[in-house]
Length: 137
Length: 137
DNA sequence: AATTTTATTGCGAACGGATTGCAGTAATGG
DNA sequence: CCATTACTGCAATCCGTTCGCAATAAAATT
Image (cartoon, rainbow over all chains, first blue to last red; front, side, top):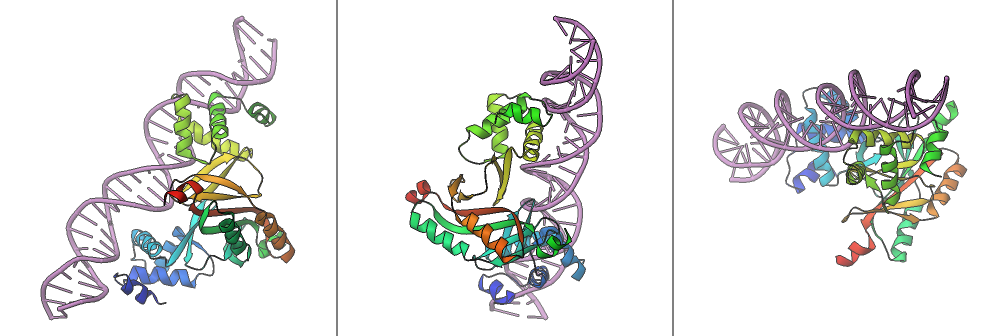
């Protein structure tokens, strides 16, 4: 789905800050912090104010176009995706990547079956060393 | 282990703020936010300053006496415990509870076997409705 | 027990990321 | 092309947390 259709559908305008934030998030191959997004947007257009970036992120989150995760100290953003992945956060370089894992679906089924807690979202965060940094140790 | 031995061992002093924070965390049956800890401590002794509570939490974290988790908006604190549990955060009442699940160990084994990412900590956060709140819906 | 040492506290100021109010701007519908 | 008003840029503000410092009190020493 394009940004334009997503915004039009929800009766919002297509503006430069929104396009730039969208582009930055989709060009990134990993999660970005709010500060990183602001910096990347400024590289493309220094005139965009950081509060517009924050407002855009918050709007996108409401529209479920992006997903915010809080791992460790800071929160990071990425384009929305389905739940069946886990997050690998590298202790050394800080990069957050995805990893497909069936444990998420397994867990959801187990929880539903056990009947107590009604799961909505499942977030699996693993910290440690990514392949690149592990080799350097 | 008592607080006194843990502090003595690491060459720290046993003080009133530290005792109170410790008591509050151990009396709580769920995770607490920093603000909740400050409030609970003030109930026992209004004279304890909130910055001392923050300093105590940070010290306890260094000594691995407590564990900080960041789920959703705010970070919460609890006495340290082993990794093989998942966190259930209720969307309605906000309570965070534990749930034993073998998926954590399963995942750790899978990751190690796959050889890429070197896992250190694994944090599974499930949001949804706790049994009590689910009934009220 | 009194004294010394210095880790720890309470206090207020400062910090930094995020939010907000407002006047000006620009995106959409007609 | 104009009118409407959602959205922006800006600066001020907020709020949770951290920090510097003088005062305090916990532990060591006598």
